[in-house]
Amino acid sequence: MNKILAGFIFAGKGIRTAFISERNLKIQTCFVVLVILSGWVLHISIIEWLICFLCFGLVIGAELINTSVEKLVDLVSPQFHPLAEKVKDIAAGAVLFNSVIAAIIGLIIFVPKIWEFIVLLI
Image (cartoon, rainbow, N blue to C red; front, side, top):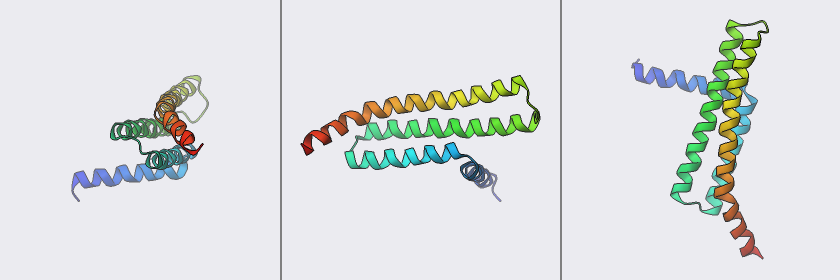
C-alpha cells in the first residue's frame, strides 16, 4: 500500500477512535454542525466562512491533541502523579483557550446577523 495512502488511513482511524471515545469531541462536532447550518441560513460571507472553518480546525485539532496527550500520560503514568495531572490540565487548557476564542469570533460574526434577522421579522 502506498505510504501516503496508509498515512491517511491511520489518521482517519485516529479521528474515528477519538470521536467514538471522547464526549467533548462529539459536543464540539455538534457545535460545528450548528454553526454551519446557521451560516447557511444567515448567508455569511466567504471570509466569515473561512474564519469559521479555521476556528473549527483549531478547536477540533486541539481536542485531538489533548486526547492523544491524555492517552499517552495514562500509558506512561498509570498511577496518579502531580506532574501528569499538570500535563493533562495544560492540554485541556489549550482546548479551552481555543474554544473561548472561537466562541468570541462566532459572536462577532453571528450576533449582528441574528439581530438583522430579528429586526426583519418585527
